[in-house]
Image (cartoon, rainbow, N blue to C red; front, side):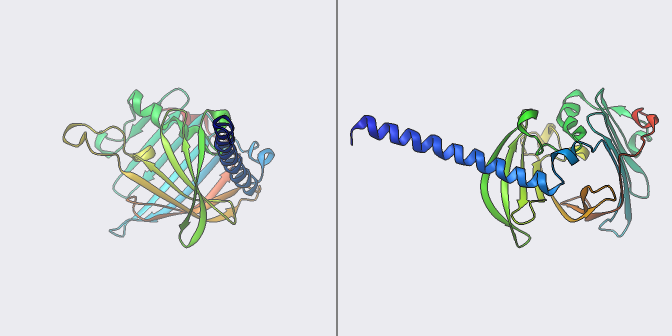
Length: 249
């Protein structure tokens, strides 16, 4: 075998490997899309309202309410008994209120707003990822809660990375890992903690149920460091949304 032939063969093998990898990623995500009802079904999802409850380590009940309108609105209220933490995110800006500022909405720093703007994506970044400017890579399989799952690293258009685990049988999302606290924490560290790596937040999804309209949602969500698991008691889709929810008040 000549050097030229060997080089050509090696080149074909390398490019063939990456082609298989890309096809495999897309096949897994096609299964994920199908498990959620398919593209035509997902494209009809315009808004969602969710109510959940969880129990803190001290036994206190924590309630949450969230309204989302695709690409337009995310409004969340978490009530922990002695006060509430509120987040308002729109395509125009972001605001936060908490007991420390007397419950008054204050603008998010621009850097923080850009970091969480993806929350307006109602279906999530895995769906139609390439069209959104994200890049996906399959990193094999791992066992999640005793079940085999595909591990996919998604590099978002803003450069952030999120790792997703898709159940190898049901093709539903069972775990998400990202650095930082998402909507309710994390971000850039300052002062004495500036050199520390952002906290890794692990979110597990389970107990998938279908709404009357045929949309699948996980009714149990568990995040490390967030006071145990949240059980959603109400999920409504495509209901009218009060225009007042878009206002920081």
